Length: 324
Image (cartoon, rainbow, N blue to C red; front, side, top):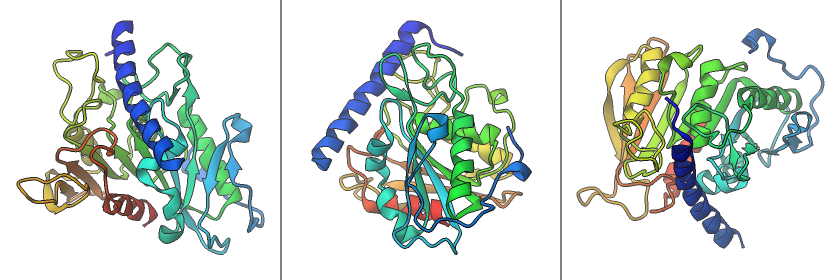
């Protein structure tokens, strides 16, 4: 279901407020092809390659390699997708993946979305998020796939370990990508995003490893479904976190409901009943495809994981997941 123009403007404005908060913190702190057709490097790799790709798409993206990068190895490729109105550099302020490429041994790509009529960068993911202002459709699935192909031709990439990490609009885009997967990915991390409202819009879902991480105090992409539809124009009409991850657990043939396997301390100033381990880790079991599908439910955390600030344990766990 599409919202009317007023609702688009209102919910776009809500996300802009989140982005403005993120940008101010950054400033303060910083002062369709099949897998058989996926190209791999067929020539000797340059041990000191260029650190920008995407020029042919007229949308360059920065690449971060491990400091001890070695063309004799094969590394996971991780693409970080920012939220609406943010950019790649601001997004990495949340995840801190660039500073973890050496410790966890992966290659990171940092692309930007397309500017809309308000100058806000967006990914054209689903009708719900986030082409709010009538920009012509953007083939972001194709763009992301092109980045993957180019990276595999230049860097020592393990073509069986290509991963997406997305926040908000970038999380919607990650879920959209694995519905089409022109270049296969085997796992994704989504923070505060969701799936198509209409399950039939997901063209060709294939099982992948997924971590869906979200705060219960998210006031932009609600943890619970935003029902009744369009009741609050400041929220994105969304499938709730548990239902969203449940769809992909069903694709993977997992038993439901998931089991609570442990609780972790991911935030500096949150406690639940006096216990600092405020994030509940739920895992689906019995998946016929052998996939790892988890929900990380952070009690009291917000949309950006900035207020209260997340700690490095969460960032390390994300980096560990995408580098395995």
